[in-house]
Image 1 (cartoon, rainbow, N blue to C red):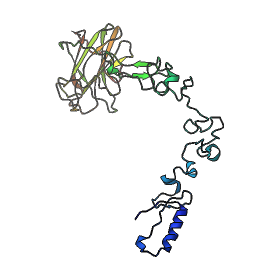
Image 2: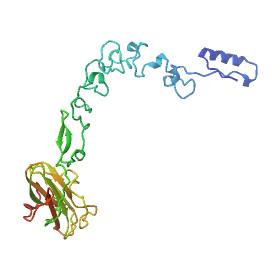
Image 3: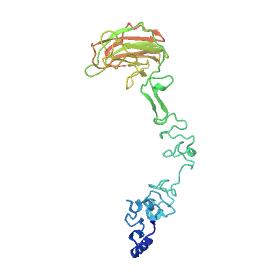
Image 4: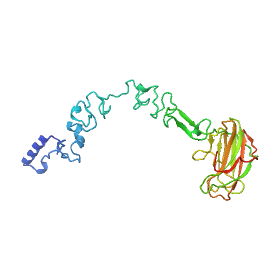
Amino acid sequence: MQHLRVGAAGSLLLAALAAASCGDPEEQIVPAVYELCTDGVDGDEDGLVDCDDPDCDAEPACLCGNGVCDMEAGEPTTCPLDCPMGCGDGVCAGPETPALCPADCPDPCGDGVCDPATENQQNCLADCEGVANCGNGVVEGDEECDGLTGLSTCGALNPPRGQGDGLSCSNTCEVVDGCGLAMCSTAGTNTMAYSGTISCADVTNELRWDIFEVPVMAGDCVYIRLDNAGLGNADLRATVFDANGTTFFGGAEDYSELDDEWACTNTPWFSAGGCPERSIVAETTGNLRVGVTQWAGGCATDPSDYQLDVAVNGTDVDLSAGPVATDTPMFP
């Protein structure tokens, strides 16, 4: 037995024929069901009513509201929901877009003008080739960067440099260099270490510093090594300021650049800690300032002992004169 899908009139006729049949009820023709798209009834019993049913996609009454202004169906005059602000009037205005109303708002790509609000070299090379739109997040033309795009990290530069204040992008799409001092590779022999003591941070957790000055020439490779040899288990760190007084190494937000580079003689009170060791390039001729401190915490003794080694271009520096300032909360 076959089930036929027919129109409404055919369904009524089949129903009448079935009622008049004298045969076996099982042999009677069962009328097909179908969806009338505007009667508010789920005619084909698939759980979808009227325009929600895919069977009604082509029904004129169901075209309005699909988000597309159909010019051929006359929607500019019959469906303001799909054709806002009079789509078809030749004026691209209000919420009209190329997608909603291509008749009034043709795609601007190809008009010979690079619109900085919507176009760039990636989505419209025809209009924007060679044109830089600073602020769109795409590096174009002669831009060095655009937002975060095009920026590197200070440690990835050649040569690697300390994080300092980092790299940033200006509002003219030029890289602003806020990196710290560059790194080098020449070490010392650790034969002229200065031995001193450093206090734990005070009750306000303010770090205490011993500050040394090392005469350098611009371009010198300055080696710094700290150890907590002696009494105490200080968790040491250091910061270096160039003779220009502004460029630094080891003072960035996470303080990791002159901290924990090697295992100290004594395990620091913070057992995951270590001691600083690094070679850094001086940028300016003058006195390089080296600050020595320890993190706030459970020092075995207060103050705790430390040893500082400094070398310039591989030659150890005599630090016997000691620091120029001791136990100070201010650095530089």
